[in-house]
Structure formats: C-alpha cells, structure tokens
Image (tube, rainbow, N blue to C red):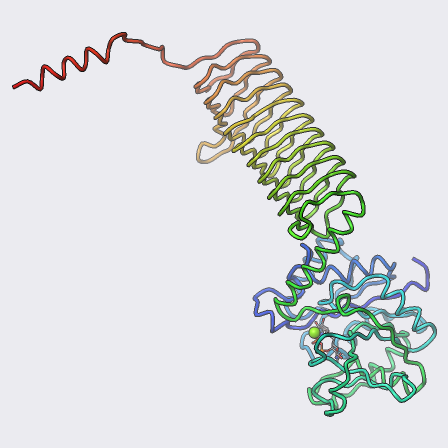
Length: 470
Ligand code: UD1
Ligand code: MG
C-alpha cells in the first residue's frame, strides 16, 4: 500500500425500502455474495489504504457480515443513524479519516452497486488526476429517478441535478450520475462542511460538490457502461445483476479451460476459488460459496456443491448434493449421492446412488455403492460397504462413532449400532445387526438359521380343499 493509495468510503446506510424485506438491502446477494461485500472487495483490489463503510439500517447485522469476511478492523464502520442524504453519509465517515493528509484521494462507492470493476475506478482516478473531483456517469435505459449530468456548451460538467429538483428540460438529459466519485480529501472536507439542505428532499446532497468543483474548473467525468454501475433498488434489479454476474463468472471459467455444456444454466458463485483445466460442468450445476474443483473433474447435470473440495479426475454423476465436504482424486459419486458436512472421501472412493454420508471418512478405494447411511463413521481403505448398510449413530440423545478398518467386507442390509468397531479384513454377513465389536479377520453373522420345508405349498392347498367340503 503506497502513500498515494486511495482511501475508500462505501455508502451503505440507506433503507432499501423498495426491496420490501426484513433484511437490509446490502445483505441481499449477487452471485452468492452480499451486496456490501462487492465494493469492499473492489476497494481491496485497488489497494485502498483505509476502507470506511457507512452503515445505518441494521448496522449490527451488516457489520457482523463484514467482520466475518474481512476480520475485525479491516473495515472501519461509521454510523449514520438517520439517513439525511449522501452528503450527510459522507460527513459521518470523515472523522475516521481525520489523520489523513488533504492531498489524499477518496474513492466513494455505493453499497448497492455490485458489478463495478477495477477498470472503471482506474479510469476515474486517471480522469481526476490533480483535480478536486471526478464522477462516473452512465446512460441507463431509463434516466428517471437519477441525478442528471448538466454540461455547458463546451461539454464541461457544471452540476448534477436530482430528479425532484430538475426542470422539464433537465429531465430530458439521458446522462446520469452513477454515484461513484473520486474526491481530493481536503476538498471533500471543505465541501461537505458547506453543504445545505436547500432542495426538494431537504437532504444533504453529495452531488452539490460537483458544482463546487466545476466553479474552480476542477470537475472531471468518466463514462461507464450501465451494467457495470447499475445499482440494486428492488428485487427485479437484484435478479438482473445476479444474472449478469453469473454469466460473466461462467465466461471467465470457460476462458480458463472449463467446459460447460449449457453455460446459461450453470450457476457459479463469485467466491468459487478454483475449477481446474479440462473440468466439465453439466447443465444446471450450482457451485455455491467457496468451492475448489481440481483438473479433469466432471460434474454432471443438476449437482449442487457448496463449500466443498473435489480432487483431480473425480467423476460426479448427475444430481449429487455435496456440502462442506472433500472428495479425493478420481473418486466417483452418484447419481443421487448426498454428502453432508464433514464427509471426507479419499482417492478413488466410490459413493453411489442414494447413499448419504455425514461426518464420515472413507479411506482410499473404499466403496459404498448403493442405498446407505454412513454417519459419524471412520472407514479405512479398500472397504466394501454392501447395499443398504446403515450406521445407527444416534440413540435419541447422543451420537456415536462406527469404525470400520481396512479391507472389511460389510454384507448388504447391515446395521452397525454405534459405538462399534469392525476390525481389519473382517467379514459381516448380509442382514446383520452388529451391536458388539467384530475382531480383525473374523466373520460376524446375526441371521436366524434358514428353514426349508419341501412340498409345503401342495400340502397346504390339499388341507384347504378338505376344509372347504361341506
Ligand atoms: C444518488 C445521487 C444521484 C445518483 C444516484 C445513483 C445524491 C443526492 N444523488 O441518488 O445523483 O444518480 O445516487 O444511484 O447523491 N445512502 C446513505 N445514506 C443516506 C442516503 C444514501 O448511506 O442518507 C447510500 C445508500 O445506501 C446508497 C447510496 O448512498 O448506497 C445512494 O443512495 P440512494 O438513495 O440510492 O441514491 P439517491 O440519493 O436517490
Ligand atoms: Mg439508489
């Protein structure tokens, strides 16, 4: 962080009335990230020397989300208890910048504008150069509601006029204020201190600083595409920006060597950390939260993977659900496998259809191919878990561990009543209910002996015929 690295203020105190939500607007998500996270991530990308986030509505919840992601103290919170306008919001952030030199530059971002990119901020800083202020402008499909950019005959920006204060002619202006600025700190202090609520909304307008800078011949503008600077005001706009974000994310991964069969249906969160080269994502695959996928992995149709790691060359067949788990290299899952939190599958493990695992470790090459529940289980290498096997891990009050050592063969339809251990290379016959430890190398059977009565059906019919006769 160099000394001329910018300071950043993120305005996020607004109510977000049009979201019609009990949740603060800036906690609604785009591509799996709360809105407020986006400008803070951008601030970090540009190497901000200090980041001040102005919060009001639900400030405790929003501050908690910021602290959880960035750690305590990475972001300074300023409080604007009453929302008296964007200028008033910036005024609340200034005390946090008290020790900073007047010549510093302050980039002001909006908490509800998620898709702003580094290029636009770099262009903004370049346009400002040594001037008092620069502002990002844009041309939305519908200018109504936004502050209009008023220029003089020579094309220089003169001021910004808000919708509610605009004349009929000014309302015709299609170029609007995107609400993103870079301002010299000395000028910001002086300008914000001089703001007055002389407007239709009786608010302190940050936009009044543009006229002040223009009077000195020190106001610059930079244009950005609408999609990059669009803000979220309601859930329709939220969904639109979410769609744009996801399309951009999918395209980035495809350019990095990931194949997608139906990219429009694939949904990849912004925080997905890696998808290796030559991996393939089928239709309607969702990668949520922090997911890491190795190289040459195939994730087939309809899988939902959340906060999980998948090793190189793994094959995830259709409709698997995987959460907070890790899958080793060349493992095979599904179709319809369900890995719940704490599942750790080593290399070459096979977990097949309708198998549910939870807090279960499976060693290298072990297989549970059909219809099982494996919970609180420690399973060694090269174990075969037969179809329909169930770990009975819960007695209604406590959870217990099932241990199955290397090379064990568990016959189909077995119940393992935990706590219980099946020793190395032991065999458990099909249909067993195992309630005690099975020593290594032993065979355990709990089946009732088989009885065969030859000719039983014919004899029974004869007897029934006799009874029927009057
Ligand atoms: C503001 C601009 C307008 C611009 C528009 C772009 C002013 C006066 N007007 O409009 O020119 O076209 O943004 O979206 O600045 N906020 C606070 N505290 C407040 C008020 C707002 O923190 O008291 C925050 C909001 O949470 C939001 C941002 O500032 O993140 C913009 O507020 P919003 O109410 O959406 O913008 P307007 O004032 O309508
Ligand atoms: Mg807005």
